[in-house]
Amino acid sequence: MAHPLSAMEFDLGHAIEVLERTPAAVHALLGGLSEPWVSGTEGPDTFSPFDVVGHLIDGEETDWMPRARIILALGPDPRFEPYDRFRHRKRNVDRTMSSLLAELTRLRSDNLTELRGWRLGPAELGLPGTHPTLGPVTLRQLLAAWVVHDLEHVAQAARVMAKQYTAEVGPWVPFLPVLTDHPVPRS
Amino acid sequence: MAHPLSAMEFDLGHAIEVLERTPAAVHALLGGLSEPWVSGTEGPDTFSPFDVVGHLIDGEETDWMPRARIILALGPDPRFEPYDRFRHRKRNVDRTMSSLLAELTRLRSDNLTELRGWRLGPAELGLPGTHPTLGPVTLRQLLAAWVVHDLEHVAQAARVMAKQYTAEVGPWVPFLPVLTDHPVPRS
Image (spheres, each protein chain N blue to C red):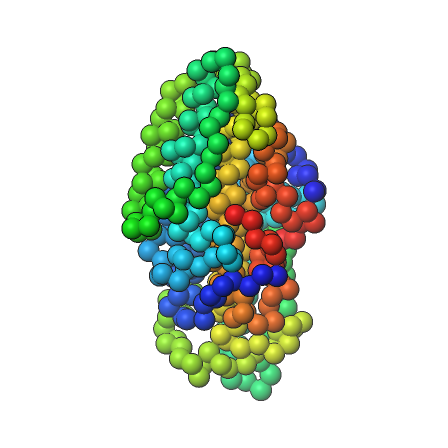
């Protein structure tokens, strides 16, 4: 891949800037949309915008902060629990987009209050954890991955919506590369 | 590419749902961010989030609605003016992200007021225009492309921000495909 010219070093304040914006960004993009925008996907076993919000909620409850707590507990085996990418499917069968957006906002706010309260410094950010498949990681890498994961799924929601109109743009397809991104969809 | 399972047919109301959300979505994602998030790119001649907002403003002033007006004027040669993808570079040298976001919000609101006022029906949506390189298009395709273009650049802003942390996520890269999207960046 082409690396960015002047990539950023991890900084907790910068990371929180993104993390605290995600619920509002997702709400502005997805809140109040008609059903076909909410439920469209890129194909079997890929996420709709509804799934994206459910997946972000799963992340709040079972992924990022729980793993950070494991690291900070300083136990003898800081191994993370495996993460279920499809937990939201059963969990949210009877939910509305509106209620999921409100839940994400609340969970994220609570998590950021806890994160800020830890007052992490360089020593804590260097503490180790063990990812079930990726192996040794640091708290700093975990928090950076949380930020990237947010942005990944904002991009995904926009991309999935865009693809619903692939056939409608006619000859514009080659000028709109988002329509041909992820030819083999990856959620 | 893999087509969506149940793509949407163009509907003016659905299209406007997206078009009216874009300024708020971009504002929620980008408003108030620190400088390195605002100015990071994917490499030479690719857009930063600042450029993305400038490019969306250019679209309001020189692309979508001006081309729709050419179509609706029913002249003998409904050929669009060529569009400058880098107009914003010189235009916005002394601007702030905050002022660009406010300008986008105002321009989009005015354009949607005009679009709604046209009360377009199937006959108008089928009217032809001529794209300078793509050839014959319809008003319907132009409006669908406007929607997709919005979503494309929301996804781009999120992707470009994510890539600033590529080196910081350590072993998480293969689990965060947004980091390896667009290995040859396309703005």
